Length: 131
Length: 483
Image 1 (cartoon, rainbow over the protein chains, first blue to last red):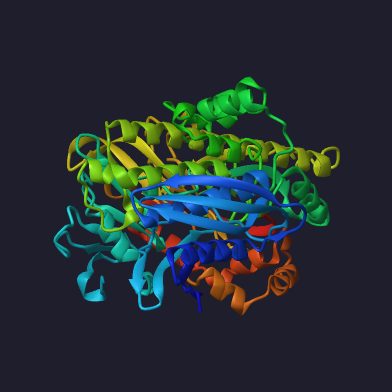
Image 2: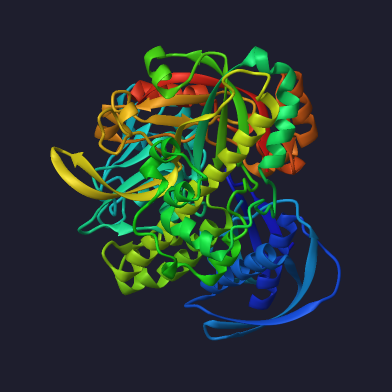
């Protein structure tokens, strides 16, 4: 199971894992979009984003926060992504689709309990969204 | 983990986790609560989070935990920490993503029985005049220039535009205009997120509620606040929307490097901070104040929408239908304030995360009309339950940096609440009790199930028992508009 919801008294928390960092980031984005309850339709738009941060945790918060902003401001969701990691940086090729419906609101992606660790299966972390 | 045996009882409603419980603590944690509240708080990591805050540099006297406390991220929700200007820090996570989330209370002299047949029409009118829900945008087309001025000037801008009265401005915390706000410290993303959201309620636990004054506990203070038994009032609960969320996100990311630069050890990455009087702290404070001003204007514009709705429904048929502002108060904010601690006057950066300012009588920051009563303290309950109006006291100045609780406080997770009740069922149950609910999202309604919250009356009992506020009036809901 790539992600499991964890009980959190005020917000929404998940344990997320992936075989690689790329898979972990994709799964985290999938969970976030699923929380929003978003539906998409229409023509795809392609966009490239570059992010730099001191560590993978900051990079994950930055990446998801960027997707969150794009969803809120431009009403677009990245259904597909190609992610390329280098030391302390991420290049993402996003395929964005217009959002036709959103159910729930996410305020932010937090650092709380965020700690990306190597495991037997790949990489894993807890991730908490402020909702 | 903090356990029950680490908590000392000092009085019926005051408890303490002593400094030294863990080696890094610089000050104790003071808890306002009952046995039952302590028991519930030990079921999550609220007290561990408060202890982590007590380890931050320059934290003064005590970290104060309110009876509505529950687990947050970094700081617990329902906490106050004051940092010395000389050697203290500012922590964006200690203020939260929804900067200046707060409550505004408007009072009318419309009797409940006069309004009974018009409540449905009022709820519809309020729903129309108050954009709410995921992705809601403002009815006003402000334009970038006015938006920027609103963020830098707060209610002063609204007053100049004819969108606020002098009384509205005077009865808003800090006159609704925090000095030192600057958009130079705000990212392009934050501006984009906020520009079309000023004047919107948003989603989540934000709401607009029509209540009636069910019981008055201090008639003289209630009269000064303009609250009369059985009369209608309106509560508005919301904050700085995507603008504040993005500002907090930007600075929590930026401050990850600030803690390394200034060699600050934090026990949780959401507690990242920068020493006051550094360029990093100055930039965050300027941005945070812009978000606070946004939120004050946001609630002002929503209040104007409520006034329009009341006019549509009551004008011509009901006397004294006008809505007067009682007060507008923040519960997620960081402010530089003067406090007397241990007989010494200090300038402190007071972080209130899920805590309401509750200044006592004669405080110079209060409007003249509230000098004798103390500040109105607005405590919304959970959906369908009571809310409270309290007044700040001298004791709050002594033991809680002029602060009290901010709500009932969650007991159950949002996902658990959604598993246990359906939004539609809850709305039907509330309707049977005479409460109208209009909501954009049924899952959002389920998350706000009153059973997912503590008993607000017990929270108020602890606050008033500890003496950090006193009871003025209890409100009961009639109609709720939820995002």
